[in-house]
Length: 231
Image (cartoon, rainbow, N blue to C red):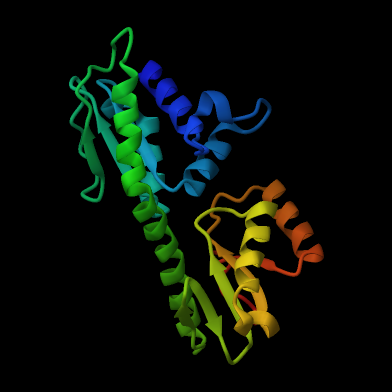
């Protein structure tokens, strides 16, 4: 399955995606488990290559549990010889008509899997984004704040604050893109602009960087796990 995973990774990269595979994506010197958890949290979906040994791996089960906790959709790619596994009812299982230990794989089979992923990735993104909106609106109800959802944005007219939820820990490019979206909506010119995200796995470095960005950009970020935004 390692060979299939590498071919899948390279095919996704060629199609313009930014996949995470630990052998490529975790820099030396970083805390492996902490970085892995953060990248899981930031993902639009988790792809599980279900080989014989997967069902026996404590680490794989832990990663699936993290994905479930963070509302990250789980897609199980089922090899012919794979462990059937007791996955969550919400997991989407897709059969691959090959064995996990083959010496080589036809690129067409890998491309077919990527085609399948492309057909569902938008729904996965929307599902994760909606979980952030849901959790934030529940928080606001506790403070009797009326939040209106409109055109992908949230707004609070009483406090002149608007929000744009994204399903990952934002970086500078995310904030820049969100600001462009805000500028396309004249209603928001006088509103304070906030990017919402859910960052349970934020590292100290993440927090320091986000704090620095907040000081210099005309848009702020807020981790909804830090209780309620102070309007």
